[in-house]
Length: 309
Image 1 (spheres, rainbow, N blue to C red):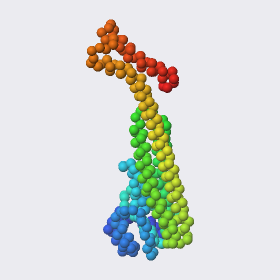
Image 2 (spheres, one colour):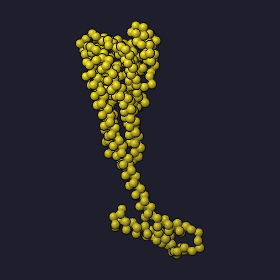
Image 3 (tube, rainbow, N blue to C red):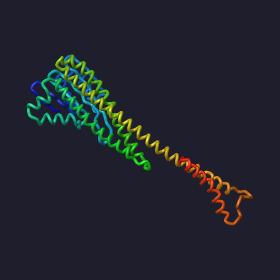
Image 4 (cartoon, rainbow, N blue to C red):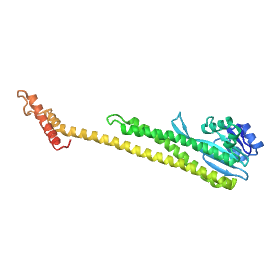
């Protein structure tokens, strides 16, 4: 449990709450028992509960997991009173919040007052802004992957196996879809808090809450832009691959068409019959080969002359 103080606000940050932490919340801070029971373990989804003098919210933020190579929802519980705010995390490494707390701990008193704020709605605003900024950072990494993919798509060699390029596209799409799914619920929760929070804090909180809603919309617009670009690239990739397949199919069809008369005549000479033309004459094998080759040569000449190949 960490405690950060400003002149008017106390911010308590808890990671994986222990029995002792829960006892402090219930006995000393008088947190409603219903809330204490809920923060003992992770929640199953976003939620928002308003009480007489506080409100409790569960928000999920998209965080990239380097080990699994995908974006996972990471839970942050927030309990807010008029004088203090409590954040509860359930993982040891919560990069954006950890960075923000570290900044508050090493800065001077004036800077800490600015970071934490003089009201809990300002503290809430700075915490969520930190998370939104981190989301923009992660989107920048996704954008870089999409730009690299674009270069690879238009530089790809049609003669090579492009399965790796297809797989890379699907990995980026899975990452972006996960990010989009998680952020959509977050945006809805922030919109609800914007309306309810004004009733809890008063009119002075309205500009801060509206700013959070607008910033979340800007992040959402970036997500939609990246997703549209990725879908366009995916469609382009499959179009180029299909064109390559069609070109190869055309070549194979032409080769089969040209070689078909020759193969037919050679197959005929392999039949077990009593009489076959040219068999038994001098140089019969050469004669048969030339006769079998003539139709293919004529077909090739006709297609070439009419610019069909």
